[in-house]
Image (cartoon, rainbow, N blue to C red; front, side, top):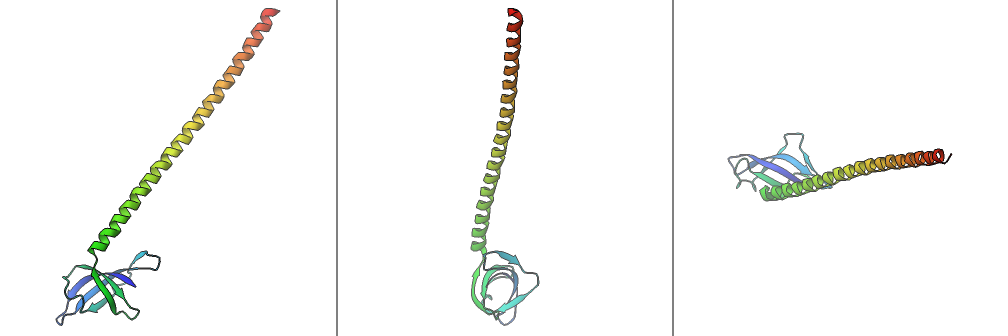
Length: 134
């Protein structure tokens, strides 16, 4: 399983203490860790305290793969910002659609009013003609 971890401290014997911050599920969703779980690693001893790392851990908590997380985090943030832009575009399109629907409804209402007035005028005109012909 893939974890995001932070180098917390370095030990005397080349061991680094890594605090597990979050893990990725099988659905590619990142879930923050609820506990202050950490693992020791000699592979991470070359990284400074505070550095974020991606760890692939086995079921028995042995590190299978380790890499600095900065580039991956930048890619994730870029993907999120693009998704956010698309969501903003979609919400703007939805607002336009709703506005056009309201305008169409208002136009239909006004059209019905004009038709009703035309019918009333035709009726008055017809009544006037009848009176004039009497």
